[in-house]
Length: 328
View 1 (spheres, rainbow, N blue to C red):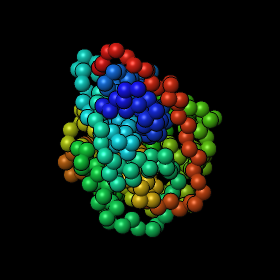
View 2 (view 1 turned 45 degrees about the vertical axis):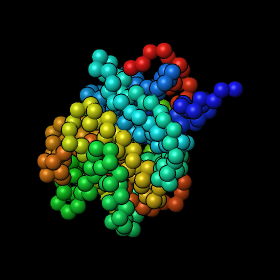
View 3 (view 1 turned 135 degrees about the vertical axis):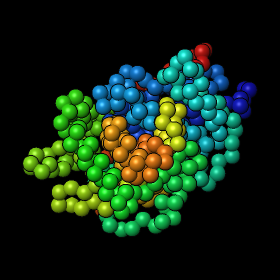
């Protein structure tokens, strides 16, 4: 039997893709699709999931696809394949986000560490403890983001106050928007299904009026009688076009996997960045006008030892088209 040393076998590709789709996505919509041609893996944005009212400009779904792209690169590198990526390779097809060619690669310790972190990474919406994060850990996540064309700014003092105000303002605006509340209801509190957030994954918090709402709709740090000591990070890029948003998703994945590898819990927030006014407020008040905010990350040590349930994913066959003759 002739061995093909220039392309991974079917088992290797399927294993890497199975890990890749563990990537986080807005409301767990998993808005990605893959095609495998003779010499490349192509990543597509699935427009079926890309028309949520709160994401009219597709910021969140492109960010989500960037995260799955990086997860795939990590999974492939850990199994001995380096990804050569062409991003947005076809201007006539904006839904084709990346074309990935593969070359043999000797896995490094970092490749293995990040690859091992993928099955353990989870979105933790619970409050975090007051245990301090070593400065070196925060420096490390920024370093990993920087290598992928983004930066991470820790919001402290006045910048944190401004960021929390923007997060709270987003909650107020979302609560008053019927379309957003319908969207949240459609994707939150589901039974165990491949898409959306299962009810068991969404703790409830109290509104000032005593009513309950899912934490997904109340992203600001601290609520109720349980203080939240999460650090708040803002992931930013130098530009704000589709390519920048895709790269931001890759950097976000690197931050989350790095945090998981050192034992930190994380939760990604994008609600305030869906509102142009609030996005600009964060850009000026937290980033000093340098860079464009793409995501807010709560990071810290979990205060609850109870294991989180894993959110389900679509079967690989539902997001994969096999051996298409045409490329992007």
